[in-house]
Image (cartoon, rainbow over the protein chains, first blue to last red):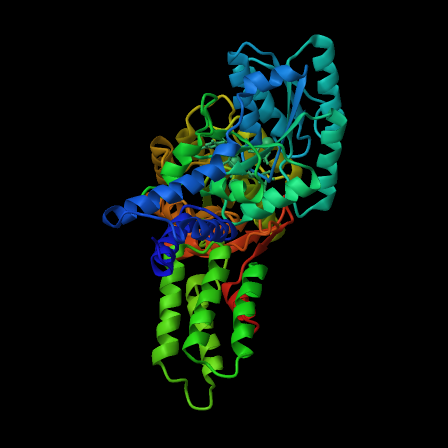
Amino acid sequence: ELGEGEVSEALEDLKWRLIEGEVAIDAAEGLEAALRDALLGAKVRRSHQEEDVEARIREVLLSWLRPLEAAPLENVVQSKRPYVMVFLGVNGGGKTTTVAKVAHSLKGSGLRPLLAAADTFRAGAIEQLSLHAQRVGVEVVSQGYGADPAAVARDAVERAMSRHYDVVLIDTAGRMYTKSRLMDELRKIVEVAGAHERVMIVDALTGNDSVSQAKEFDREVGVDSVIVTKADADVRGGVILTLAYELRRPIRYLGMGQDYGDLVPFRADEVVDSLLRPA
Amino acid sequence: MLESLREGLRGAVDKLLGRSLVDEKAIRDFVRDVQRALLQADVNVKLVLELSKRLEDALRNERPPPGISMKEHAIYVLYNEIVKILGGEDVKPPTPQGGRPLRIMLVGLQGSGKTTTAAKLALYYRDRKFRPGLVAADTYRPGAYDQLRQLAERIGVPFYGDPRERDAIKLARDGSERLVAEGADVIIVDTAGRHKNEAELMEEMREIERVVSPDMTFLVVDATIGQQAERQARAFAETTKVGGLIVTKLDSSAKGGGALTTAAVTGAKVYFTASGEALEDFEEYSPKRFAERLLGM
Ligand SMILES: Nc1nc2c(ncn2[C@@H]2O[C@H](COP(=O)(O)OP(=O)(O)OP(=O)(O)O)[C@@H](O)[C@H]2O)c(=O)[nH]1
Ligand SMILES: Nc1nc2c(ncn2[C@@H]2O[C@H](COP(=O)(O)OP(=O)(O)OP(=O)(O)O)[C@@H](O)[C@H]2O)c(=O)[nH]1
Ligand SMILES: [K+]
Ligand SMILES: [Mg+2]
Ligand SMILES: [Mg+2]
């Protein structure tokens, strides 16, 4: 049986490993508490104590992360026609690039996605999305800079209905959750578009700010799923554990690079391996 | 900057001040509270452990100078350690020297804010009666050329770019030369975002730096970056001569510990901070002023 001292020591070590692996401190402490309960009094073999403790930790981590594995998008989008997805998140996280990647993937499954250039604010945003669309070989709805983003979104949904597109992917301007006017604008886009899925984009390099991002976007607008981008940047994937603790929404994909094919489904066991890998 | 780091540290300090005596437990609690505040602020784990060890040693083994209480001494030690991370004395933004144009190059991770910051810098120099020019040398991200061109038009500064050119090194070289020939005295080169595992892009950045030979290579750091800041910063500093930092997105709730870590790893100082998307949301940074404010001193 594991005693208080042994458990504390193992958990202290794990907590530092997790924090180094980009897990936010609240989530690391939350997990520590959950693990304390799971480990105290647990039966382990004296001869294999470390292994057995690690296996227990793995189990608990998996029980947190497994529920975040999402059903394949190409199946989900069949439920509505058109299936409307709004991509949202803080500035520079990778929304526009991810819209292009998702369009590429849907197209590869034989579906017809339509993009909406609802970032009518940031310099170059429309050209960026249009160039992506050209390369991926899909259509974009745009009304130029300064247009009401909600009107662009509505326009795209109507076009998708009349021309029988399967999915509408709405690219929105990056915004800080600290700016209430911008959060209001986003809520309006979501409403007017009748979004079926609000996809939050989170940069894998984000530290403790991911906690505020998760809480604020969910509170102000609502979040149905998450895509974690830039997971190719030598990260351990701690942001995912933070999101599991703070938000508990399915994680659709991990962005693994700047090419269209660099989008992989989230697999709980792979992230657990990465988090527990020795430094 | 770092308002809430200050709050976290102040919390630790206030708790210490509230105690009647500084015993073993008080020291342990103080160190733990400081650790937590720094970790929540995204300061690198190794730095936090180093700092808290020095703090603990000082509190256990040093006698406060005469007339100074143990509590005051503890706060003083913490203050000094923070100042060390923050990088001491103030810096002045570079300006053209001896009639030679000033060459600036911006590098950093994807989406950290380089292109926006290039325009903010141009505006900063224009407001000080210099003649800045912007060079678009990101051939990688679709629309990067349009983004910088639109920003340059908005503030009315000369711009060089070519959306059909695929060679970023050539663009950087030709653009700098052209703008100098046209009379610009501050050349600002925007480059593509990249990270340490993208070997080809890291190599391209080294080449761009070679042909531009900038007086200042600014690493643009997103304030929301977490523990990865350390390794990424190291990779950038090993590939280019990172001379200064610009910290963006301070309008988030992030406390900027990743930027502090970057400063510690690269030895480069923070020159500017940005706290919004608007080109006016940009200011010079004073480490000293901040360090003094940090603990309310
Ligand atoms: N390495 C890597 N880079 C990525 C990934 N996803 C996006 N990027 C890059 O991140 C940068 C920002 O991406 P964008 O798609 O413009 O981000 P955004 O969220 O639309 O930005 P704003 O609209 O300005 O808020 C670009 O340079 C992208 O190429 C990824 O998975 N890996
Ligand atoms: N809220 C906020 N947004 C910022 C700030 N600085 C830049 N941005 C935004 O962050 C996003 C990314 O900025 P860019 O200038 O495109 O970043 P970049 O580093 O050039 O991106 P890549 O070229 O793709 O690597 C844009 O939406 C900017 O408007 C800031 O200080 N605060
Ligand atoms: K970012
Ligand atoms: Mg975008
Ligand atoms: Mg850029």
